[in-house]
Length: 73
Image (cartoon, rainbow, N blue to C red; front, side, top):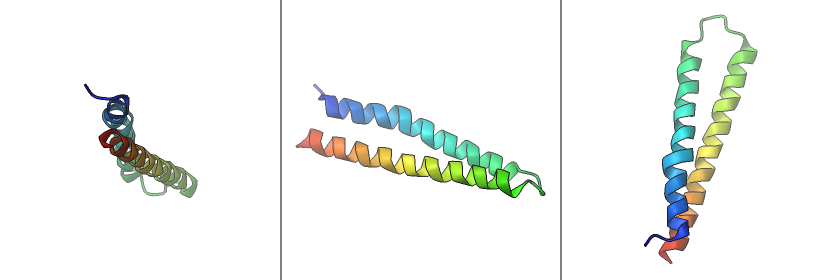
């Protein structure tokens, strides 16, 4: 029977992490589709959103790794 940590790690990976990755990809698609002459402010806001999501992805991956290590112990 999987313990709570393993279950939580799987839920984070299969739910939140996948949603963050999909959102990151959507932002990149929008950024690449911007027409020439798009305001620098709009481009910077998209870049900021992309960086924030990337940091969140990395943090969720760290949490998952810690949960899996503790579940294996």
